Length: 218
Image 1 (spheres, one colour):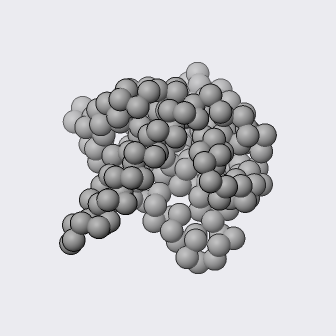
Image 2 (cartoon, helix red, strand yellow):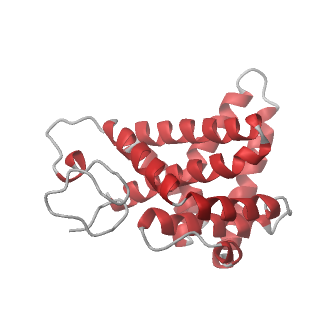
């Protein structure tokens, strides 16, 4: 059979995947009444193993991405390409490649519209006294699944918004934990030393994509 996380071939009786280290007991044999919050622990372990096993590729790809992601407007295409190449790693479809960063222009317009409206709303919310910052953070949380869906499937704005809200409603706790931990990891990487971001950014992005893929399959 195949591992449901990394898609590599494993023995039918395997308890953990020998390739990505994922715990397969709860994944393949879910128990009645099991809390979905346990999915986050499994996802975190899976992502850590994917990150560790692909670290050299991820460092190179992330370094190039961080060098070009500051270019206005066209960086939206680079964000899509970076996300897609890490998506290949999560799905077990190949290694992360620098060339992928520059080849995801098919979703540019939909992603541009989505991110532009999100940024406008976030800026407006920052001027709201007391609750503005928290509201802006909540908006980022709500926007994340839609961003991933546009990059993966080139959804339109309204379709991405609808899918994102529905996916959060279906699995709120895991989305919240992924968003929280992913952003903390990224901020820690930037605050510790900018160069550490080539380690923290891919880890956080792998975590986001892993959650997206899990919800998309459910």
